[in-house]
Image 1 (cartoon, rainbow, N blue to C red):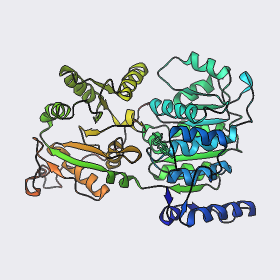
Image 2: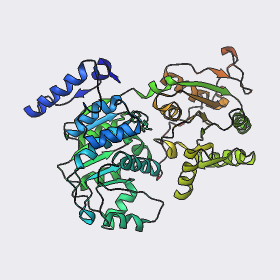
Image 3: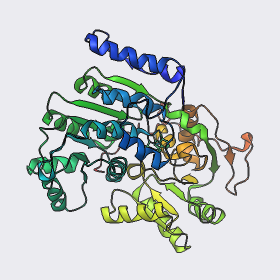
Image 4: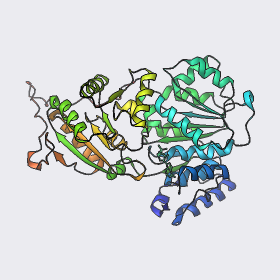
Amino acid sequence: MRITACHAATLRLNNAGACRNRRSNRAEHRAILQKEYILSFTELGLIKPLLETLANQGYETPTPIQAKAIPAILEGRDVVGLAQTGTGKTAAFTLPLLQRLHGGSGRGKDRVVRVLILSPTRELAAQIEKSVRDYGQKLSLRSTCVVGGVPIKRQQQAIRNGVDILVATPGRLEDLVSQKSVRLNNIETIVLDEADQMLDIGFMPAIRRILKLLPAKRQTLLFSATMPREIRKLSADYLNDPIEVTVATVAKTADKVTQSVMHLPADGKVNAMAKLCRTHPGKRIIVFSRTKRGADKIARKLNAENFGAAAIHGNKSQGQRTRALDAFKKGTMPVLIATDIAARGIDVPGVELVVNYDLPHVAESYVHRIGRTARAGASGLAISFCAPDEIKLLRAIERLIKMKIPALSADGSPLADSDVPQPPRAAKKADGGKPNNSRRRHRPRRRAA
Ligand code: AMP
């Protein structure tokens, strides 16, 4: 992979006044990153067992986030990574952390948790822990995943048996800490993954409480798809002289996906969805619904027509969520219906079609959603349903991605600009005041993942 000057320009080095050692290390980073450079995993300083595993996985070159973050993490630096899933972010932090732990862990029950990875959702936590096991298959390190929605006993036993790397959702981790089932005083590195989603879900107070329990001398890695003010503040409060690594902005990922928007009445969506399943037989389809009830309704309709669909959202048991995701990954159940909360960060290769059954209230979510297809360089298709009362949301998305999404009519034929419906006109207030159509500013719902 060619690391261009443009990528290099996004690497910012903070606090020029750090010690001389740091300065020379930074100079090396700059040297790597400022010229056009073709990097290999070997050049990044990874050890042989990891290189062999990467070769077995078919990874030939590091992705930009890996090229930038791996050397910094190996060196022990704090890192703020502005990157979303699909960029190779998990390997970017997992590989160097495995290398740092290698050779230094105890045996059996003497192992202590030295790396803590926090994830906003159970599915993402499970996915990260699987990556940790996959990438670390040639090293003798142990990891486990602790999340809510499943019995705590087995997790307590796994920790008692000795663990080097713990992947957790914040709620379950706090439960384990309060029951004295896990000690955090040996943590050398903490990773906060998808920090902006943790903020959305309402995990920020828990994150701050957990950070206070960790040794002051530690490495902190923070990854986030966006950098809202609260995440900047978190970074300023808890990271020490971090290197900032940025790869492709959120809006950029929309480029690789063929997008269209189907204008139709709200009550025509269910039938349009069934029709899409008929016209894409056997294809892997992810459908995004704004509400849990809506997701269940779509699943019922599609199953009634034998399309093989399951819904995942916060009201489903962990067993149901895991079974649905596994069946979708294996391809035995081709349609997955999800709410944003359950789906972000989930990496399923080969998703051919993303359907936005409802348009999201937060424009950035659109980009995350359609990013479920076109992963790892592949191309993909995204179709969004837009009822008349969603046109304002559509305009906000188009402003974010800086493009007009080609319009289709309810039967799927192209729609001329002049035929695209306009947002419903607002009724004037009786007192002659401003029209009362202002949608309440969206505040993310706070729910446990
Ligand atoms: P992530 O952003 O961590 O969710 O990774 C997205 C996908 O890219 C995963 O399926 C990884 O297995 C894959 N991947 C990560 N790094 C590389 C690489 N250097 N070369 C090829 N595929 C990769």
